[in-house]
Image (cartoon, rainbow, N blue to C red):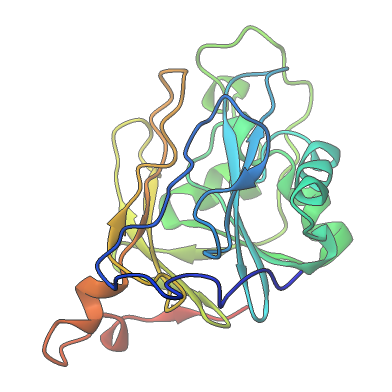
Length: 231
């Protein structure tokens, strides 16, 4: 689904800020009209971890595929996106409710799985189950490890078509935690969205939509000197 790239800014002031719908109590929805950034809801059967999707002209990037593949696919359908078009899934850290759907997603769609280099050992080799959950009593019988992942570090850029996500390493909640800065030409003005505020205490990522920061800097783009992760 190529949704609404031309809807923003028509007939309005260039300085007008878009309406940001970051209400996590609602079901799956587009966060900024025409921005192609989607909140996919929470799988409350395990925790309150949310998944997000950023649609590009070359496919979809999912941030935290969650615990169950079927839940992710259903949430994407709710916003008229096709799970088969997911090309990249970014895992913000190793806890189960953020990534256990990743292996089935990769097996069914071929999506590239991306995480911080500190996460690789936890995602590709099963460890003590306590490494994958810390506050939930639900047992984890099997860790769905991944054959391989693309690793990133602080300052790297994940790129898919016209979508770019800059990686910010944010150890604390776990040693492999990352935040993401979304840089998209479709964002018509500068807006910072703390869209991953959770009702639980799980400290996740912030997706920041910030075109102006880069376009207004006098030709010194940070993205040109940082490695990009191909789909």
